[in-house]
Image (cartoon, rainbow, N blue to C red; front, side, top):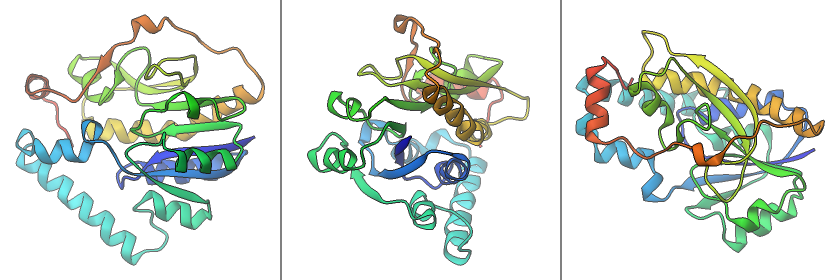
Length: 255
């Protein structure tokens, strides 16, 4: 199959996830839409900067050190992938930079030229009907929750404060309704006593390539998929102050 990927540019988890996927995938990856600017309402980095006071000083320090380490390693070690762009350049995958709205004609035209059978989404943008209809088979989305639980933003955070025993990754066929559609593949991750929000997200991305490969295999073989009532979807947005208080009350750490 011909595969097209839409992915956010972030130095935290996406570079290693994409590299893992490109090394494991048997299908041809024909192109990538690299999301370099995210709408304010969905921008994680902007949210953290705006609400920096919600983090402990130790967490701010750890995030700062981690970010600096990535930047330095990406400069001085050409085998280290500190950005999604660096992964794409290494694997020689053609890509186009996307800003805020992927439903513009310039991006739609680029995707159509690639003639994909499947579009894989791991990004913060909303696909409208025209993009959803481009691939021969379907668009699929990677989401860090066990759908239909915790659709929307920051699913791992919300699962943690609600004392779930597991988080996980779901891959589903995309529809015009966010995080709805047939579930093709899914995998659980147990929440351990020493886990932070950061480590749980890392674990989700560490298994994501394998879950996507499983989903593509099922699409290739036209296997039956697991449907669910989309009315049961639980939608969440960025955590509120009360949500952060619950995190601290339950001895939770961001990083």
